[in-house]
Image (cartoon, rainbow, N blue to C red; front, side):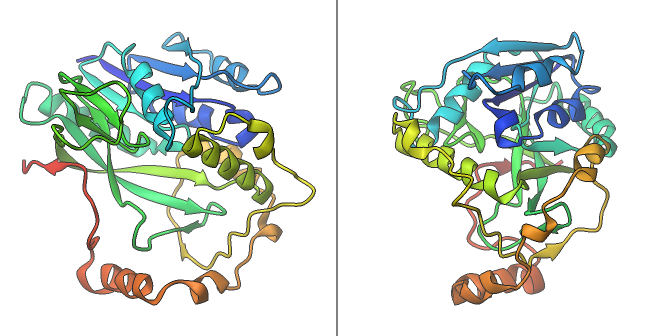
Length: 308
């Protein structure tokens, strides 16, 4: 059984993505790791950071991002497809550059892949998500934040990344452009794991959070004028307005050094102001999910769970 890991990344250093920790977290599990490295800014150190890991499992594929041809964040899915096309494993383990896996979950995942390797009815493995918010001890668990997603897949025929690279679908009539296509596509059949994805995409200094959102808007709009989206560190900061659920568990070991360097606690707002402004319906549905039903309500699920 061969396992390929893969990810996409661009300007990770400038945007504070934990790309090194992400790769390191599953490197002991995979036989190869493909990094689709976009055309980074000259001052970015992403390539050097990836190479500093020093593993011969890692292969860098140089790519060019084209957000004009793939707006609405579809360039993320396009880049994911490019990275996936270079994988040669029986299983493909996709991590976004802000996602990290706990070392305690590696052996259970290996056993799960071995169990279903020859089973044609299983095409992927589902993970539970922990979305960190602002710092490393708060998480968002409210309605609308996905609680599960596919991160391990088999290289089945016509498999493509889907939407903004959040998930995967089988798309036999894919036109090479529309990653939001639903017609004539199908969801993957997956098995549930108890393994976790630690999502750190919203943990960064407030000024860098603004820069991330500017680039996000750039990808959605396809606006080629990046200069209009340049981050102004002197005038703009992101207000987390944080009073979310606390996290008291153990982080992945590879995150130890990054967490120790956390230094923007005084820039976060713990006043609960965001909760006061939150729509009553969303607050009510979140209450039902957390306290009554213990599951997501009205959530779109891009997968079909196969019972063992």
